[in-house]
Length: 135
Image (tube, rainbow, N blue to C red; front, side, top):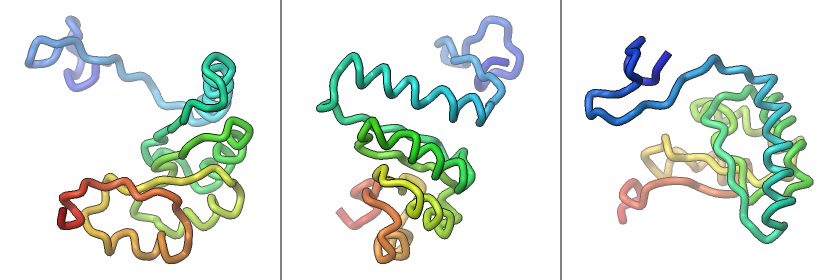
């Protein structure tokens, strides 16, 4: 399948630009593969390069906790959007099982959306547009 085109053979969108292929999501493969990718990047570029990863809200709390734990040796700058944003309680389990810094927020529209997460120290970084905070 071609992203956004629904079976088009040419693999281009309405603007004529190529679209990426969409493949079946495999969480188990992702959880196995990502740490080795991060390890290779660390080996190539060293410990000083800040590494950030966005999980796009695709993981359960247990999967996110495992991934965060598996990424700890590589000292990530952050793991972003590891669980669905609407389930803020999920980050309690993640936080209890990893020291990898957590970020969330591009889907939030107000500082009030972060209040619980910040008050309970469930995230390390707020990701939001300045315009959502009155700036």
